Each structure stands twice: as structure tokens, then as C-alpha cells.
Length: 293
Image 1: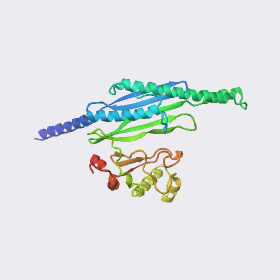
Image 2: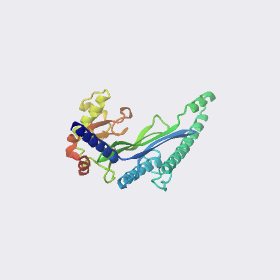
Image 3: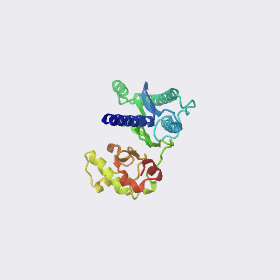
Image 4: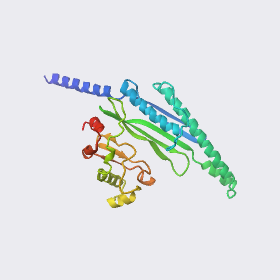
């Protein structure tokens, strides 16, 4: 009898594991690294295998994000530097080769123009010796673009992908760009654009303060609420919700602020987790359905 029960338990466990695997969003990864005379490009891209309608929808949304990020090169730019891929979006190799080649060509062109201008400026400086000019030019840093689009969570109800890049185009330092964490409903394939009611900013202030105080404490800086508000670089007294949509984890919703969004560059990217119980009054109907609240 015990042997039979053990066999049945093993069968149930095996079936559950199989179901979990079957329900996971299958993906394919492509990695590229290349360089030009004055720039480098790395790309780590993970896209869903188009096995069904929902997976195709998620894949297309992620391709849209990739196209927007790469075709503009730098954050805040409105112009496109090259056209959208017009081939078969399900041909991953052709898709990724196109964006890799186009991005590398454009960043190579822009970095070469920058290098040429820098060299003219240095060569014309009468206060520098030939040796100093040569050293300055030799030490000039290359432009860089590290592109990342990868799955970070996959549950029965939703999948989360992270769009986060590092871009350096001269100057004191580079910056983090991207669309942040993107949460998709696995049943419909739709991007969940808002998990929190955007009208809740005033009511949620105590929780934002709590989270930010915890972020700084984790960084070794203990602040009072008054000191926190002096530390932040915001207009008025109200802390805004982050531009990147908070995303779900096993602990709750994770909030991430980008560089310079509410604090100085030296403060990094303030991030913290608030539990779903705390956020219950502020969840959108879409979030309640997705998170089963």
C-alpha cells in the first residue's frame, strides 16, 4: 500500500513539474558583441518563441521596445537613425542581425564624428605639446552601448521582461536607459501598462517615504524623513511615482527610479519593494486580476 501511495505521489509530482514546464514562456536568446574604431556594442536579447497567439503578442511588443531603443541610440532623442526591420519578425537571426548591424553602423558613425571633432580641437590647442596632444587622443574613451532585453520572471499568470541599457557617448559618465521592467499577461499577451492607479500619488506618499528610507539605509545612510526630503531632488513636496512601471515579484511590487529622476547621479537608482497588502487600495483592476487580489 505504501509503495502504491509513493508511486501515486511521484506521478502527481512529475505531472505538476511537467505542467509548470509546459506553461513556462519559452524564449530564445541571442548575444552579440562588436566594435568600431571608436565604439563598442553588446547586445543580450531574449524573445519569446512564437508558439501561440499570446507569445507572439509579447514578442511583438518586445520587438517594438527594441526598435524604439536602438533606432534612437541615445535617451530623449526623437529622430530615428535607421528604419524599422521589415522582414519576418519570427526570423530571430535575421531580426537581430539587422538591429545589430544598423546600431553598430550608427554608433560607429557618431563616435567617429565625435573623435574627428575632438582631434581638431586638440590639434589646434597652442598650449599643448605634441606629446600631450598624442596622449590625450590616445586616452580618449570609446563610445559604448550595452543593450539588454531579458526575461526576469515567469509565473502562471504573468511574465516580466527587463529593458535596460547602458549608453556612453563621451562626457563624464554614461547613463542607464531603457523601458524598465515590462509585465505581460500570459493569457492575452498584453502589456500591463499600469499596476497602480495613477491618481494614488498623494495617498501613497507614506509608503514611498518608507521605501526610500529603506533604500538609503541599505546603502548605509540612515536618514530621517526630513533629511530624506532634503536629499531628494524633486519639485514640491510630493514624491512622484517612478516613470518605470513598478513590477511584481514574490515579495510585492518593486519600485525603481532612474538616475536623476528624483535624486543625484551619486545616489544611484533608488529601488525598494512594497507588499501587495500595503498597496491593496491602490491596485488597478487589471493588477488585481493579474495578481489574484
